[in-house]
Image (cartoon, rainbow, N blue to C red; front, side, top):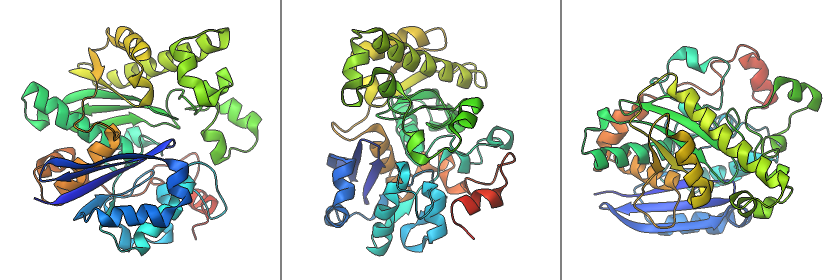
Length: 358
């Protein structure tokens, strides 16, 4: 069986999960800032894993492109930043470039907008319907629900509700395939991120930078980014309570929006850093109960995030391992296009120019 590795390039941590003949052999988490400060060391760590295939840090996604074949245009489309943009997800582009140059067996995986299982009309004027790591978290959810319900992968149905270290997102899954999504920059308020921006707020801001997409969330409300989870899990001030209510209610509304196009999901799966706090998870389960039963997404690793575990499953399936049927059910091999293909309010040419793409 192939030895494979999955990477989740989170805002707070970068997580690794490795599978060898179905058994976990790597289960690690590193502060993102530390990993990006020593990219050669991080690449060396991946090399020592001796994996046949690595599902790499893919940002907004690429349709299953091997790292060694990626161009600068591919990387700008994956991370949606130009050469001068240092904020937000653009900081991971140097890591992706290093993985390409290292000739490691890295494959960049798709985001939600690349998947043909999502109808075209739902993609109109959308870019962030869910980053590649959200697709990976869904893969873990499909695998987990099929195992729990003892049902075929194609009978799986759920809403993934992720409240991560920075962003919140909701993804709808029917018949084992993703059919819609609200990504972190187009969905509900996150722990650090503002989520979907009111158009008039965007106008008043004048210029929207990448850094702005990572601010304005619960941490900005409480004014204490380093302790935001503690503050909203046990609110002591009016601002703490406002932040908690905004985060939880926004997440519930996002799940309700997904339920509008798939009215009978079997369950809602909770993932992400915030859902590990029982005080927050308990309230989410209660508030979500009119839509569907909610529970924490169960994984098979102790340390690595849900997305890293799902990435390992995807890598295993793409390498011809036991999870090949999971990859086929989700339609990942059918992914195509770019994140700019469905824009009408901004022309794709203007978007490319903003990214510095000729």
